[in-house]
Amino acid sequence: MIIPIVRTAIVSLRRDRAALALSFILPIVFFSIFAVIFGGQHDSTAKISVILVDEDHSRASLDLVRGLQREGSLRISTRPSSKTKEPLPEYTAASAEAAVKAGEAPVALIIPHGFGDNPISFGGDQGGTTIQLLNDSSDMIAPQMVAGLLQKAGMTSMPEVMAEKGMKYTDQFIGGLTPEQRKRMDGYLEKLRQRENRQAAAGTTPAQTDSFTGPIAVKSRAVVGQNKRNPMISFYAAAIGVMFLLFTASGSAGVLLDEAESGTLDRVLSSRITMTKLLMGKLTYNTLLAFTQLVVMFLWARVVFKLDFFTHIPGFVVMGLCTAFAVAAFGMLLASICRTRAQLGALSTLLILTMSAVGGSMFPRFLMPEAMQKAGLWTINAWAIDGFTKVFWRDLPVKDLWPQVSVLLAVGIVLFVVARRIARRWEFA
Image (cartoon, rainbow, N blue to C red; front, side, top):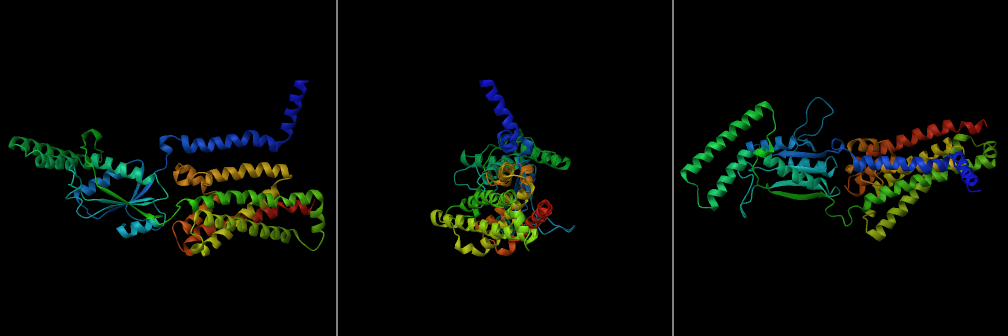
């Protein structure tokens, strides 16, 4: 009797496509997404964008700049990207700080005047000229990696400076070098200079084994989020909020399927209400429902987690309504595509969880490989999270939300138009 029971259960599973998809397809999709994020190869790791300002323009600072530009894990920018052929002016300390605040890069390095005179230090109170590292505190990994790679670049790109300063401190702390020792050291420094010149002319990279150790003084300063009580609360409120908005919108739009199955939809369409007006009415209701959910979630974050909510009301309203409109249209499209509630449940679960994983609702996008970050831009989640981050984290004005607002509105309009087109099957059923 056991074998027939098992056979019957297998046949039932094969007939229930929704259960089949949730049982096998969804785990594979999620495994693949997180395998790419956490188990990707070295060449797929996202590069860290770094804004670099050289105020010194000495030989030592230029060597350090070249060393940083050779680092494969960094994407160095010395000037803003230009949409025209004319290059824009190089970053200054002020414009670099503004760029980090605007989210153009998580880190900026400022090499100050006088760096070439005292770039490194081997002695206790013999501090070298301090490099400023400006960072966005929402990215806790980038500043640490850049600081470490800065030390590496200093060791590999400034061997002459390392040797010269080492000789200076040796002379200072052990009582001086003999004339013969100084002569040998001067000869070695001259060889280093000649080799650096040859390498610069050939465009080759100095070997790490030829470098000298010696710390570069770095002072880190957070320019974004330094006054936030709970830095990541706004991010997670938006990330989790958008994911569950998608679930709510798809479930609410599924009422269309219930009405079609019960015959209510036919009776409604037989009146003076057209399918376009019906869908627009449901879209309006689902948008208001989604927006109300966002309001409740952010108010909860304000009361329990002290999120600075009331000073960001204009930006929240703009982003909230645009996000709610986009997810409502997404739900309408799913309801129009599916034939039954079971299909809607399976398809919405598969798509929403996948979009949430790729779009940053489950894991911050800036920690993903570059290919995954670009893929995330095809999701509603990514644009909504970026917009709420601008509002609550970067304190940017409403006018700076135009990229996210434009995309969300365009997505909502396109999805609704497609849903209306597909919904014609109910008019001629």
